[in-house]
Amino acid sequence: MNRIALAILAAAVVVAGGAAQRATPASARAADDVRTLMQRIREIHPNPFHATPEPAFQAAADSLAALAPNLTPDQLLVELMRFTNLLGERDGH
Image (tube, rainbow, N blue to C red; front, side, top):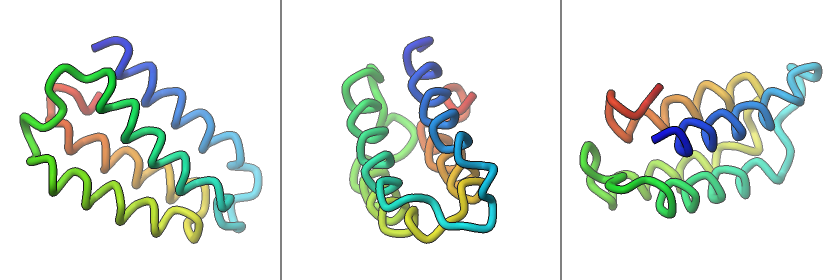
């Protein structure tokens, strides 16, 4: 569980690192960051789909990856928090 929190925190720090340029969109790499987060959740979490079925979770990841390059770093951070909340209320913090 601590590794999941660490992975989410690391993703948040990477995204927040560009917060000085709040008005500019996140980088084109933001979509890759979302895909990497999804991959790490699959690798680390013992049961990532207990609260949200896998197809819905994957659809949310794909949707966020498509939107990510057009979001500001702050918006992307909020969307990443919403995405990780799909793991369930026990794992969203």
